[in-house]
Length: 395
Ligand code: PMP
Image 1 (tube, rainbow, N blue to C red):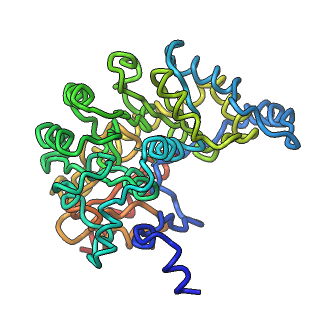
Image 2: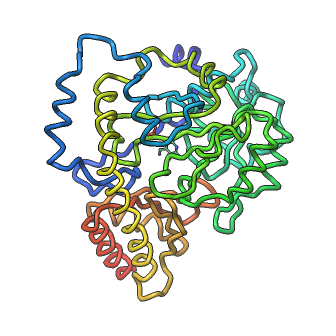
């Protein structure tokens, strides 16, 4: 059995670690950038009435036309732009990668495995080195891990350009040099970035789009928490697409992402979409939710205000000794640097206090001693601060 697994499964897939989701049962969940607020009771009946109409015996509308219309209106997507829906924006990343990947071309990862070299989860900076001319997907590291994983799934080589150590800014010269060298088919820029929470300089992103021979996807998963966006810039360059999700605005359970851009691109990428990828319950629920967008916007506003309060409280926690350093964030989470060697103990200590956050130390050299904390409700944030105060006292 094991021999067969080793023979049949591609070596670069065997070398991957599966995307890990920790069990959060019974814990205050501040690990996954979810909106902590549920639907208000007052809207539940209307929502359930909308679901009651859903015909579970039929396949859903393959184009999800009502939902597309609701999204276009709610998000001000220009009429002349194409729109593609995914089962989460993760699925859109996969569709993009599938649409451009050239089967049969061996990736550097596969070549290294075949030569008996250990590549495994190589640190990002080694991947920026000159390589074999394989088709590449480029992004910035530390960044969203699915870009790297999906590149591996479809046989694209992943190139991660390191952000600069100073406040995780985009290193424009290095990024432009990497684009020139690797000629990536796809470049993903998360704006704001996960896990660092910052926005990159929009002028630098413009330079990247203009210099890129391939598609540039500005990933605005955290759009509800910032005023910055490239959505109004769609059409300014032929190779710009904007990707978003409803996950962070309060609908993570529905799994719905969307990709907007010039219709010619969207029509091609749509061909690799599996039929009926958005189920009828998600279509009905999201259409309903978007028609009540004011509710979601009010929740988002509360989270934005809480983010500022939480950042100040974290920085002040030990009477201003600076043992926790929150970085500026335009998202619904805060990246926090602890004193050297303390991140692991704080992460474990918080879990013992019933609070789950994300431990990032060890995941990338620039994230040494870092934790990522999703902004919760005022009560959840208060519990977090109290637990951290107790843990810091003990150290
Ligand atoms: N892009 C970024 C930058 C993210 O952080 C995430 C989720 N953490 C996603 C995309 C995926 O979002 P979803 O699949 O829930 O739409």
